[in-house]
Structures are given as C-alpha cells and as structure tokens.
Length: 405
Ligand code: HEM
Image (cartoon, helix red, strand yellow):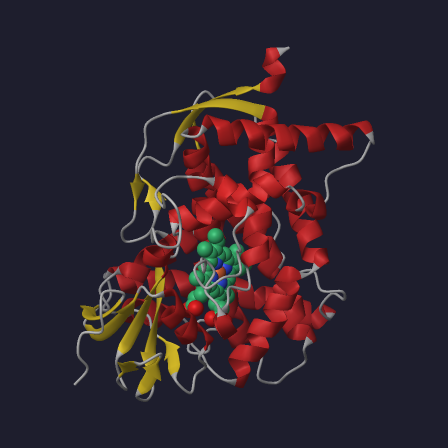
C-alpha cells in the first residue's frame, strides 16, 4: 500500500476516487508529460455523461492527437488570429459608456460569439442567440448529479446538447455540400478538409460543443480577473494604459489598424496577463487516472488511482514566487514562463491548444477598455469553487475618455 509521500505529494480522496495529489512542480511536470500508456484524463461522471464518446477531452491515442493537431494548428494560425482581431474590434467598438458595467457578462458575451464563429462559422443573429441560451442550459449540468432521468438537471443538459448538435450538424451538411472553404474559415472547415472517414459529422459536431467547454468560461474569467487585479494596483493600470495608448497613437498617426501581432508584442500587457493567470488559477488543476502502477520521481501512483496535478499550489508557492499572493506583473520581466512552476495551460500532449487565442482575446479586450474608458471598480470578491469567478460579476462604473475633452 502506498504511504504518505511528504507535504507536496500526498494521498487523498477526491470525487469519490482514491487520489494522489501533487503540489510539487517536478512531479506535476512528469505527470503532464506522460502519455496514455501511463495516465488517461479523468473527469467527474456528470461531465463524461455530457461529453461525446469521441470528445477530444476524453479520447486517447491517434485520434486525439489528430483532432488536437488539426484544431490546435488552426487556433494558432495567423488567419484565425486576424479574423478574431477584426471581429473583436467590431464588437468592442460598438460598446458605449455605461454607468454600470458587469465586466464578466460583457466578456462572456463577446468571447462566446467570437468562439462560435471560429468553431462553426456562425454569424451574430437569432441562431447565435439560440445557441448561447442552449449552451447555458447545457453547461449548468456539468457539475450536477449523474442521474439521467427526465426532469433532472443532467437530463435537461443532454436535451440542450441534442438541440445544439442538430444545428451544428446542419451546418456541417451544408458545408460538405458546398465543399468546405479553403483556406479554412473555421474549425469545421479544418476537420472536413482533412477528408478522414473517422471524422464523421457526429464526431465533428460533438467536438465543436466539447471545445466550447474549456473555452467559453476561461477567457472571460481571465479578462475579469485582470480588471479586478488592475483596479487594485493603480501603478500597473497606469503602465498598461501608457503602453496601449502609445500603440494606439502610433497606429492612428500611420493611418493603420491594429493587427494581432501588435497586441502580442506589448510586453507589459503580456506580463499583466501572465500574472493574472498565475494568481487567478482559472483552472486550478487537472485529474488523470493511472492505467497501470506508475512511479513518478520516486512516488508510486497505483493502477486505478487518480492523480490531481494541483497547479494552484505551485503557482502560489513562496519558494517559487516572492510574495506569491501579490499581483506583480513586473516579476515576469525576469522570470521564465516556460518553467515547470508555471502551467496555467497544462503541458505535454494535452497542452491547451487555445492558449494563444486566450492571450490575444484578453489583450484586445484590455486594450479597448484602457484606451477608451476610465473606470471605478465596485467592491467584489473572487470565488474559487466550483469554478473561479467574481461573485458580483465585477461591476465597474465607466466613463468614456472622449467625454474628457
Ligand atoms: C484562460 C483561458 C484558458 C485556460 C486557463 C485553459 C487551460 C487549459 C488547461 C489547463 C488544459 C489542460 C487540460 C488537461 O491536461 O487535461 C486545457 C486543455 C484544453 N483547452 Fe484550454 N484553457 C483556456 C482557453 C482555451 C480556449 C480559448 C480554447 C479553445 C478555443 C481551449 C481549448 C482547450 C482544449 C480543446 C483542451 C483539451 C486538449 C486535449 O486534451 O487534447 N482552451 N486548457
């Protein structure tokens, strides 16, 4: 029987499963780097009930690598980033001064529309609104009890998923009939364009919905947390504003619009996002299940046990970060982001394929906010369970900078 392993790696019981918890950066890194011969992903039952059988989040082996590779390459492509940048400009420039704005709600609405366009090519309109509503109905079941009887939360979620799948499969059929766009405009085009028999309409549509799960909430929370931390750190807000105002002025003087590469080149803005990821721990950790007895750096994880890789505790370890609870974007001037002590997007074969997109969307949102508005934040609190969010949705009182003149 496995004994206690020491303070950073210990045994526990999570979601009804015997689990080894690792808060040790090197042990965590080894688990992330392992493949399906040692560990497979593990999620609570209600979640696996809602995911398709061939969901990228669940499957292993060649098909997982193929879907991950195709979708990941598209998410990283310059073409998608340019489209996202143009879409976000359009969407955010229509935002006017509100007396009171809930950052979390605005970010959610903007990010969802951009995501759906990138995944299935749907434009804003009544179908987008329907999909938004059904996705909300679907997502509340993710943390419910795993009982599928009519009337239960899980049952209603599954019904919402069926309605979404019908809409998406119709889009896939239309695209196949017209032949998917080349170069691809969305993730469906990419998967159809691959021409593999394994990538059936059902598999593609299930995966489009399952791709919305890790993307839909995480980016809006990243944006909302950044606004919260900046509101509490005037020095950082001032430097962010200066950097972004300078870029805006430079581009206006040259008569150019901002491209995605401009946003990603703003070093302080990127430090703000990195620090928000570290301190905010949007995904606090991930679970794997051992398919055989696995020894990781001297620690035994018995076959059938789960291992919880606890990012949060590494990100807030005072042996790795000075004053870890302090929002300090300047620490990233020196620090290496690629070390095993910083893994907000996981690592190894399952490293988040949306990481560039997440950073880009957050950069554009912050750019618009700090260059167009001033704000005063109202009191709000971060809640960490069951998912990270702001209790009141981060209310801010905004005034347009144009009103200053
Ligand atoms: C701040 C935003 C985000 C954070 C913190 C985040 C975090 C993560 C983490 C930690 C994982 C690893 C899960 C594991 O190892 O089991 C992951 C996987 C994944 N993420 Fe993200 N993510 C974010 C945004 C996105 C976006 C925008 C997309 C898509 C557009 C996305 C799509 C995915 C997918 C598909 C996987 C599963 C990859 C696989 O198992 O092959 N994520 N994400």
